[in-house]
Length: 310
Image (cartoon, rainbow, N blue to C red):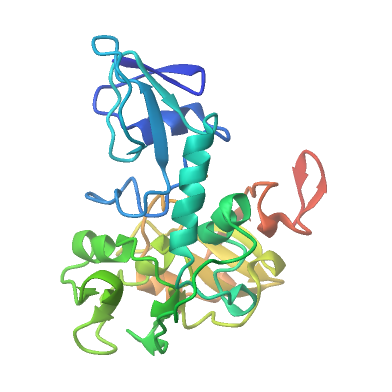
């Protein structure tokens, strides 16, 4: 076990724990944002640099601070380590710079994007974004394409977090999409258009932190804050069968996997549950899903401080 102090809060964690995971065990505002790291995906993290922190004390044995800011999702804790997250202006300024880079090519199309209301890039832009851009060059653009019968790819919105690629590598029998080209020309693409057809391909929609991969069966039907997320389950021979049904009245508009407070999928679901089961009679409804009061999805769902009304 190792003791680490983050913004003055001390916690004891197991050896091999990253600074980000330790911060999540503490909770609160000091938890660094993460756009590419995903707990259940091996190899994820280290791409977006939004989780930068400052290590002011390396360890009890070597108290020297680390010379540069480090990615908390890739940095292992050491006994006696001290970390500054939101308490150091250097860290917040660095995160603001990272957000500015992420928004260089990202279009301002939140009013028509299906990810609006549950987009982590929106949250980052609100917390660290600038009112104006300093980017004077032509932004790169791509035409939206269908990369499967259920998935629409808006490459213009992609921030190259690689999450969907890791999902395809680790969750599906064969990967038919990935990163092509390099540098500023890099993009997510399939080898053959409309090639993504496996039973778990819909999970790339859930792990995408922006609106680059969207559900074609849900496109432009409703805003998420107009829908009631309900915990549901069914007997399924392919997956756990536990999901969230986004309902308007008695009609299911879309089905997604259940996510934790850090917007990470708890258990992946199959395409049958996600796309084919839109009749409420095919599900057992457990009840309304708990919604954070800080989320725009909570709009109209709370009558009082302590209760959720659906």
